Image 1 (cartoon, rainbow, N blue to C red):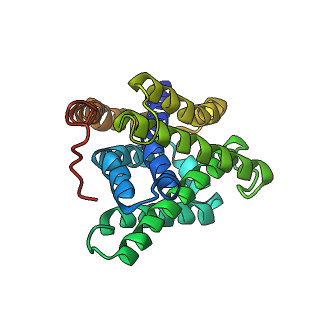
Image 2: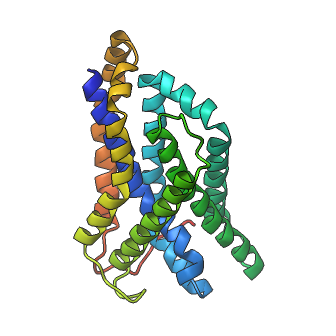
Image 3: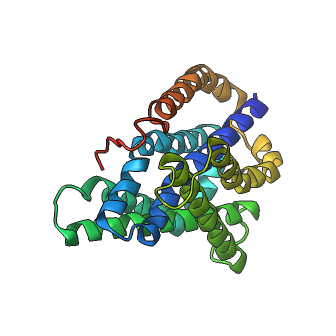
Length: 254
């Protein structure tokens, strides 16, 4: 049962990096590619249908960690407390930017919340790289380390590449390029590789420090049957908003 939950946790974390990665990437590119208000609106609208569905994966990752790896929860929350707080604030700022940017029509108002999206995306992307570094060292090294900073830069660049590929897939030709779904899948896998690599290295520790078998059995009955629903909802979102004849009609509440 410990191995099943390890695989499940790995899939969830990899799925979050591959899916939320392009959300963050588009946010990172907002001040780079969004030279006009209309272009920024198009970028946000392109990613809007996917944001909430992608964030569900992070909730699933956190819930699985708390239930299956309670010792890891302590390591993350207490050992990385300042970084976790900074990432949560970045998440709130990014989402606030998405929700508030169109509530008023002034250019200053839009500019403020577009900047919030970009800075929040940067904080999350960079923070994930530093978190992966700390996890790779068994939380023996603080995340503010040259290698941690380097991994933060790498994750930021990977998410930006993934976001650019998403825009080239979702809005063919609008940002100077067109990419296939296969290319988007490729950048998603690349964005997820660091997370999978860290978890693979931590596999012995996680298997040894899993919750008791009785707890895992209860969680299996309660959680695993919901996994197909999560996957089905994700597939529905992608099929509904895939590029096609209506690719330039972007329903958006952001």
